[in-house]
Length: 542
Image (cartoon, rainbow, N blue to C red; front, side):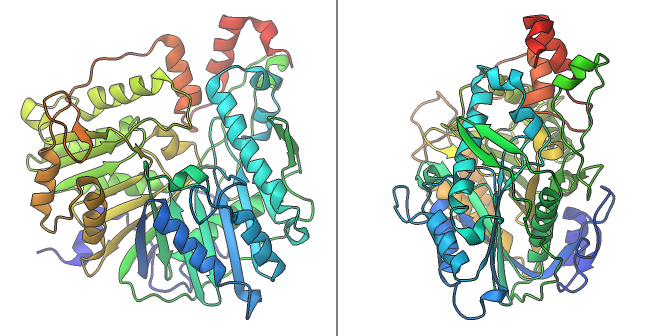
């Protein structure tokens, strides 16, 4: 039997190790400027997966409600959201006790409440071509951003929050600040949350499946540092007034307060080794020559604390999958990442005993239907996941889809040893272009990851299997689509390979520049050429 340290070297990216918060943060005393900085592994920490909205939102309510009395100078609520809805309640889908009112109440009581809500890059939002676009995806983003702007405007009605409710304007023009992160501190006790759940009413729905991780102990330092860097970066930017769907909001106030570096001395009874992981984009833009065209290309400033970007999630994810011996389990909403499937393909080729379980659900009802996503997934599956495999090796892979639920989770489990939970999808943009945050963890006691797998699969399979092999066999016993009586789990296995698909030349440009962009590449040139070819140069006029 391998020792825990041997297992850790197999599944976790190496780097600095911290057994307490003191000295454990790479970022507390300075700014990170390179992707080569080692990833800290925090020991003596705890990760508690919260499956679906109900448990997560009730945990938030419990912690937030406890604030506002006693030594409030050491109490805080920090929120970084991709989609914030002013009607959202922690209680239920139709609850009337809004979180915005709860946050205002706590701020009045002296709690340090700070909120960052994502909006598109300002130059993109203010670009006349983008504003005139009839594309459903673009208009959907304006609607999403308008919801977040209403949320921020509502918070600003409380004077103590006027400078602390801000728009997160840092995104790459082809990306988003996709984090769904909350930190709640009460004295020495701090909980950080990261995962796929937005503060939006429909996340309560029983047809919405998702996972959020609660992080306690020294590892919470990594979440705080990630929030602090974004907060202070926004603070250093010029205030800009933005409008989306007739909702207007200033990005932030000139009096936005600094968030000082601090070192947490939080304790935990856990014995988990946890890595706090980020994706931060590069900002590289095409040079189009003619000055008039350059002016039409939306850009954004590079991050002062990470000018060359950060790809920690990619590094940790690749290492975790690369260590797989028994099984790889991923549930995700997209499965368009060709790289992730290349990693899995390599492990299947190397190990005839390895099982791969991939879980997806119904199309997100908040997104406009778009056939290109099906094509992108097909290409990733057929040309990367299955590339060069034999028929026997095909049988090692199960792709399962739920017939009723939206599977919005972004989580991977490998061998009951290593797990990843966060906001990063199995998409290229999550590896390189969107701001993302995830946690990877292992447990010295060998209890935490198997417990997560049992609980998560228990929801899907409607039965909790203690024995791993029995649980894996239960997945592969699910009937193929169209083969007869559907499974009572409402899952069906998808026959592989998928029906062939290819991208047109224009779709390839949209894939590279919009749908699944890679910030390592210079952005915008192909997109401008596409618009000129289809609509003429006059369409680019401001």
